Image (cartoon, rainbow, N blue to C red):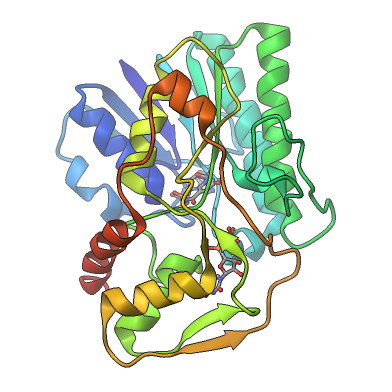
Length: 308
Ligand code: NAD
Ligand code: UDP
């Protein structure tokens, strides 16, 4: 197949491009390099089945493709809050442009949605039928509401225009090729520990997240894209749930050294707890994460040792 991956030079996108190329597909990677890097896909450039296009998803684009994976959007809070209006435009106009293209060329189109559509959830663990608890006017809203609006567009194009959609809700995912200055918790803690700096736990560290290793997630992406039982939304993530203090301790144990834990103020609207209910993915995709946090952290630490 010929497959377009928007945001393909980013953390998740580059792993996805790699896997799609390994499977024998032709891949067009479209990225504006806001948080993505050429280094993430340099090894794919010599492959004649791989093409790189510098482009912004808020401007229309046309490619004759069979499938589109729409991943373009900064994902870490410091990056998506850097230019919040642009973040909303990226989610909303990027979705419209991908859906318009999918309609025109009859491609199947995948949206990388997020557990952030559940906001600071009052239902735990989160199931796909939960509508969420989202602040529409806060610092995280540009991302959360942009992604919610993108889901709305996907389902309206599906109902109105019969566009063949797939919507996945990704829970916190980590691994090699995250940026050292990404700002998300796993990369922050690992980089701090490697530099011997104190690990910055925001608030008292009792808030929870569930961390999925990138290889597990990408496997889920491809299984979901290529099945016909459901268009989603479907949760994908690792149901293991950890407090940020537990994560900090695990990183310290993995990296070793003398770093300690320090506390910083909790950002506004920071979700208190998050864990995916992945019953739907288990049933439909026969999928569940295989890589426990301890193993995934070891692999991610090995990567960051080459970066810092
Ligand atoms: P990332 O920041 O590494 O990747 C995003 C990519 O999109 C980058 O390459 C960036 O340059 C590109 N991009 C941003 N704005 C663009 C624009 N306007 N036009 C073209 N390219 C643009 O983040 P990631 O973790 O790889 O996330 C990929 C996708 O998955 C995002 O849509 C994100 O919202 C979603 N997601 C990720 C996670 C996670 O834990 N990693 C969780 C939930 C959802
Ligand atoms: N966090 C932290 N220290 C950091 C970065 C993040 O304690 O250096 C916390 C953050 O407040 C949140 C959790 O870790 O409770 C996950 O944050 P991240 O930005 O990785 O993802 P998200 O909040 O979008 O799930």
